[in-house]
Structures are given as C-alpha cells and as structure tokens.
Image (cartoon, rainbow, N blue to C red; front, side, top):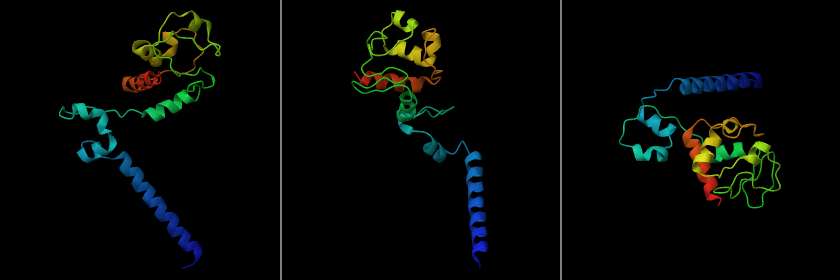
Amino acid sequence: MNKNTAYSFLIAAVFVVSSMTAYNINHVDKNDPQLLNELIDLEEVSAAKDAPVVAVKKTKSIDKLLRQCATCHTFTQNGKNKTGPNLFAIYQKKIAQNDSFKYSNSFKSANIVWDEASLDAFLTKPKDFVPKTKMAFNGLKNAEERAKVVSYLKELN
C-alpha cells in the first residue's frame, strides 16, 4: 500500500468516526438515566434527587461565568480597573465607590447598596436596573447562574 492510499484510508476513518460522534451527540435518548448522570452536574440537583425530573437545564460553571466578567472586570484586592471597575469587596457597599473608575452619571447618582437583591436585579439586565449605564453586558437570564455570581461576589468581602 502506498502513502497516498494510507492517507486516504486515514482521512476516511477520521471522517466516519467524526460523523458517528456528531450523530450520537445529536440523537441521544434523553430519557436514558445514565446519560442524564453524565450531562447533569448531580451536585446541583442533589437536593431534589427523589423528585421527578421534568426538565433540567445545565448551568454554566462559576469559572465560565467569571471568564465572561473578567473580560471587563478584575476581582482581586487592589486589582486594576479595566473597561469596568474592579469588583473586589463590593458586597454591602454603595454602588460606584471605586474612586479610580469613571462611572456613568446614572451610576453615581443611584442610591443603591450591592446586596443579593440588587446584584441579582443588575445581573438580570443591567440597563433596566441602572438606566444609561455604560455596561454593554446584556445580562444573565438564568437565575442559578446569577446566584453563583452573587455568591462569589459575597465571598470576596
């Protein structure tokens, strides 16, 4: 067998395996309990383990969520501002308190303290919570994901 024939077989084999994998990913039995165990982080639903599962949506991990935030923010003590302010120890503090960051006028004039409710509302849709904010982020629709971010910000205090 020459090299060209061997490469052709190799490419064909890779194509077949890729096609089978793609098919299997898109045509799975969603009622298969073993598959559900693999797709769902069971820690997140352990409290409801005896309840019937009607619909489960996997949420992003805190690491993935923070990577989104880290595009514009830092989370370390004395961390630098980016497009957005450093978010270290903001919980239970009045918003717009980072003196080295230039907040929008709407942020500066808002009389809000960052607590669970205000952070959740802000993370849901920033422009609805603080009109005319400069923050370009559209928000997190998933309540569990917002709760993870709020919990993380609380831990930074």
